[in-house]
Image (cartoon, rainbow, N blue to C red; front, side, top):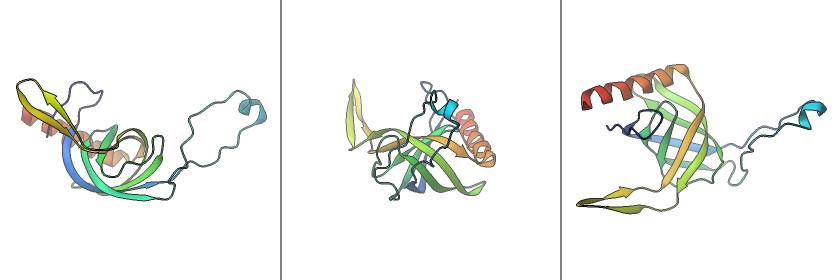
Length: 146
């Protein structure tokens, strides 16, 4: 478990099996007055309906890094994984970044950093119970590392 101070939310390193499915985005019907001035980011439909099996490797209350076959950027995804204190968790999120292959970053005077292929997901919807459990996990890991 590890703390990374460069991120908005504290996170921990984990190894939790996950199933991720690209679900797309429901159609939006707006009043004509609003439709004329409304803009939003639309999810890609590329690979919609496809499932990826992977592992959550980095987890925070805001999102996760998932090691596995990367889905396209701006995919809206449904995720299923388990947390020890909660049991099965279902969440919806957006893929905001990805690494298409494993990568090695050299470090001055130390072993290189290994980065795995996968993608970063920002949670759109996750149960409050799961979010609290993640917060508790991260807080406990932070306390034990200081």
